[in-house]
Length: 150
Length: 150
DNA sequence: TCCTTGTAGTCAACCTGGTTGACTTTATCG
DNA sequence: CGATAAAGTCAACCAGGTTGACTACAAGGA
Image 1 (cartoon, chains in turn red, brown, cyan, green):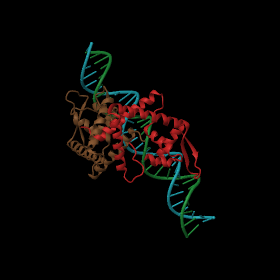
Image 2 (cartoon, rainbow over the protein chains, first blue to last red):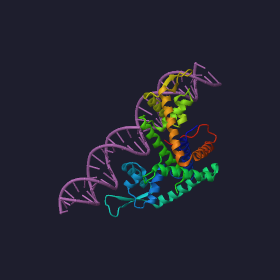
Image 3 (cartoon, rainbow over the protein chains, first blue to last red):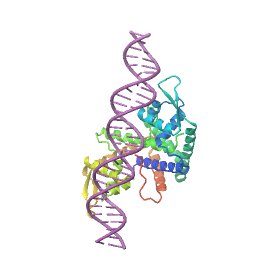
Image 4 (tube, rainbow over the protein chains, first blue to last red):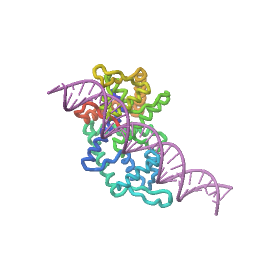
């Protein structure tokens, strides 16, 4: 019998593939998972900086800096001077970035409905509750949730 | 609300960290997840070859070859001549390999019980059923299950 | 005010775990 | 046989991270 953690990983991989297939159908650039988390962080933190992003992603600031540069090249993100700290830059989603995030959210919703089609909406809700409770439990004192493997 | 796929990934990551913490408590070498899948494949396929392993892992044969070499260096795996094909080699777990696999299975069981402590054994079973059904559904015609992200 | 200590960000070198491509040796099938 | 395919290796490369050294600016005392 396959241990439950492995089932989680396999299912996640399958869903990610589903997501990318749907992106490809729309002729969308397939960004990596880490980019998705970056988008979410920027969407929720309008004053985001590279260092803040690095902490959120759980990587070094150098790695975060590379990611920002990449997303900037692709036009999803812009860098503005920080209002009070001249060392720092505000990193923010562009129009294009917001639009991509909207599409991604819609597609993840479709993937989730695909799961519901197989196991039922009730089971999906129960699973979300269970996983949420587990994540809360293990993140314990920490404020930020643990990041996924990517 | 966090999409369910992300919850899967975050929970998997948390469980992996739990697993590695338990390994570390036992002063065990922390092998990577891919190694775990390799062990499982070798355990179930006593006539395994490098190419077969590569297909199972979903990587190139060169990558599988590197992994085998590494596990061989660490004494978890041995290479024997193939009985009928002189190009090929049988790759098999050593005693040490079997022993490690046993420990890993026990620890994954503990991690799973940690989940059950939070959400209840019934929910764990329901989740395992649901995920299993989903994985079966999406793997469709394919015989081998999709591999996790590592 | 200046001076020390800390922080945002970058540059460069390196590591890891994979990739592609070229190759040798052995199998297999007409 | 001879052509084609498969097992495995070697070498070069790539992507996405790391560590370490550095610059520019910030902030809080003496």
